[in-house]
Image 1 (cartoon, rainbow, N blue to C red):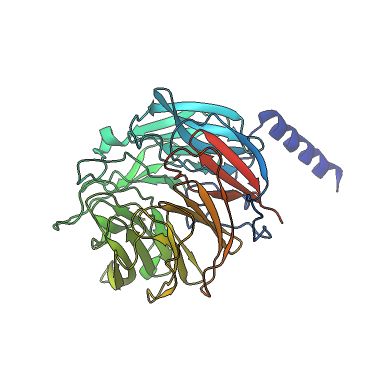
Image 2 (cartoon, rainbow, N blue to C red):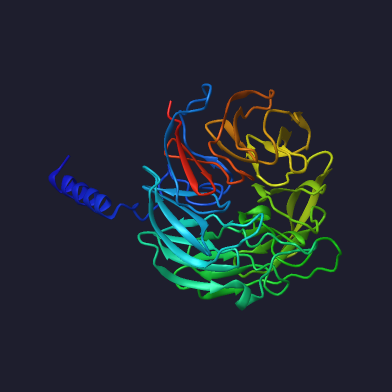
Length: 432
C-alpha cells in the first residue's frame, strides 16, 4: 500500500469517526430505501445463516427512541433512517446502525393520533440526503449528516394531493419517495397531478402528469404504494398503484401511457407493483385480487394487456408486499392474512400454499440469500426457503415487546436483520 493511499484512507476514516455518519454514496451492502436497493424487497447479502436456532438469530442490541409508527428503515453505512411520532410532533429520525442510539431527529409535521396512527413513509437515502413524506403529505429533503432541512414541498397545498378514501376513512400518506437520477418522484394522485417529478436538489417542479378516468372503480387520490420504474415495451416509465388502479407514465415528460383498474378497490390499494421485463404484477386486498399485465407498444404509446386475473379468493395481498425470485412470486395471501404461497409469475399457477403457520394477521416480507423473511402482525418472524419445490420453514421467533399491529417491513443490511417495532429498534446477527 503506497504512502498516498494510506494517507487518504487515514483521513477518510477520521472523518467518518468524527462525524459518526455514513459516506455520501450508498454501498452494495446498504438498504437505502423502501424495499431495498432495487425496490423489489431483496437484499444483496450472501452467506447468511439459512436456519434459525430456537429463539431466532443472535440479538446484537436493542434501543428505543423512534417514536410511534410503522415506517420501515433505510440503512446506509453507520446510520438507520426512519420516521416516528414523539408527543405531538412527527420526525424523521437517524439512529446508529451500531447500537441504535438516536443521532438526530427533524420535525416534519404534527403527530397523527389515531388507533392506526403514526408515521408511515420510509425515508429514501441518496447522495448524502434523506427524502421523506409526512402523514400530512409534506415532502422534505434533509441532510443525512445532521437532519438540517434543505427544502420542503407541501404536496397537499401545492397539488391538492389527498389519499383515495372511498370508504370515508384514510390512513394518511404512506409513500416512500423514488429517486431517479436528478429527480424525486412522488404521487399526489389527482387527475391533474397524478405524479410529480421534482429536482432533487431544489424541489423545483420538472413535470406533473395527468390522467383521464371514466370508470367507477376506486377513488381519485393516492394509494399506499410507492413508484417503481419499468422499461416495458421499450419505454422508460414510472408505474404506480393509485386510488383508480395501476398506471404508467412516460418518465421523460409525464405523458399518461396506460391504466388498469380491475384490481382497484374503494378502501385501500397498498402493495408496491412488481416489475419483470415487459410484465407488471399487481395485487390488492379487501377481496379484490391479483393480475399480471404485459406492456406492449401501441402507436407512439404503450398499452397494458391482461395476461391473467385471479380473484380475491384465489390470490390477494392485503399489505406486506410481494417478492419475485427466479420467475416465481412469493407473498402472504388472503385478506388480513399472511398465508405463505408460491405462484408461477407467467401463468398464475400455485406451486404450493397457501400454508398455515403460527403467524397472525398480514405478513410484511423481505428476502435475502434465497430465503424469505415473513413478519406477521402479531410479531412472529418466520424464515422460509424461497423455492417452488414446497413450503420449507427454516426457523421462527417472536419480536420482543410487541403491542399491536407489528407492521414495519423487515430490513436485511450489512449481514444484519433490522426490525423496527414502534419506538424500539432491534438488530440481529445473520452472518454465517
